[in-house]
Length: 79
Image 1 (cartoon, rainbow, N blue to C red):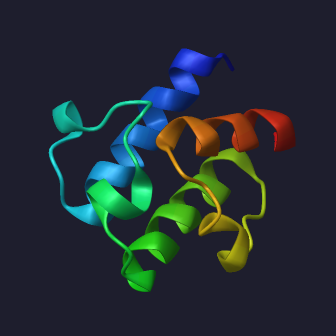
Image 2: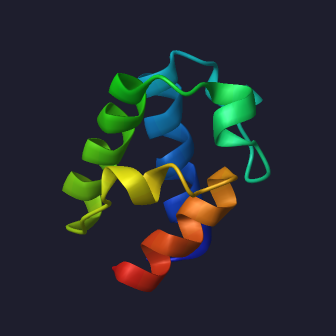
Image 3: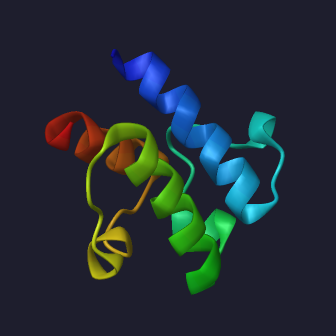
């Protein structure tokens, strides 16, 4: 598993959860500001990531990720 693969997966999960075009989501996309803060969307995205990488992302922790890249860094550290 390399960073590019994880990034591509996270972008796809974000696209599905937040109903945004994947082409508009990048590593520097700010999760709260550009995607949204609805907890159900965040839970859906976190659930997809947890299932894919067999890790746990506490809801409170998810809110601390500023960008998609921050989330990718966390996944790489935990997986």
